Image 1 (cartoon, protein in one colour):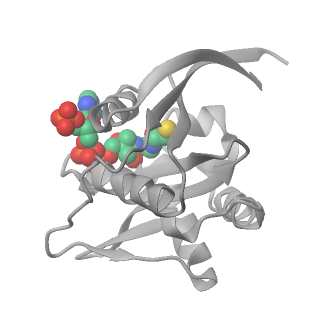
Image 2: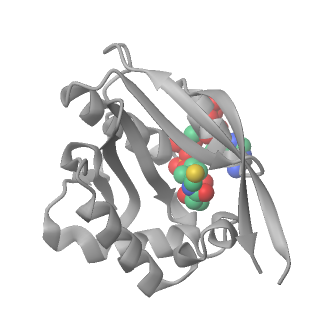
Image 3: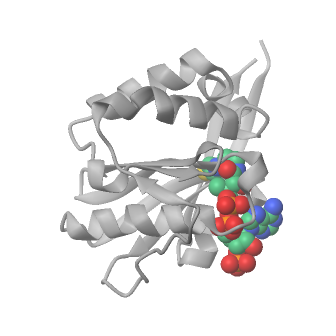
Length: 176
Ligand SMILES: CC(C)(COP(=O)(O)OP(=O)(O)OC[C@H]1O[C@@H](n2cnc3c(N)ncnc32)[C@H](O)[C@@H]1OP(=O)(O)O)[C@@H](O)C(=O)NCCC(=O)NCCS
């Protein structure tokens, strides 16, 4: 079976309280975490990722059940952080998701961020990211990181716009 190597960046940001807290204008509002929200996160994740490059890198992101499995794994991590895990509700239902965990370091780790296609380009991705970073900061973390596929220009641009900087290049091998 052929192996594809995806170029990925590790990006990091220092958290010193200087990142603006996010504001969401009506009709958008935040929906915080409780365990009953797991399926809603999975559903939004699937709508965000199924037609995107990352569903090639992480095939579970391309299917609904895979997204539920992924959300369960994130929820079970010892460092799972409700304060960095949010949905955005819009006029037609949930339209954005982000999840964060505390990794060894300690350091905040963004797991996934996504906005459904119909609601992109309105600042919701930035708001989700800032909201998760605020959650890390409130949890006492002073640094955060994420990994992004190099070809995913909208995501790289989103992270740069909030202040993340590239610190390492990685290659992820994917079978098939
Ligand atoms: C990446 C993603 C979350 C961006 O969400 P969004 O709500 O459209 O982003 P925003 O409107 O908040 O834009 C944030 C910044 O990214 C830039 N950006 C957004 N879409 C872009 C695009 N298609 N091309 C270039 N830049 C883009 C914006 O210009 C803005 O930067 P600026 O303030 O310097 O102008 C969204 O495209 C998405 O869900 N993609 C699929 C899932 C995914 O790949 N997630 C990331 C996994 S690592």
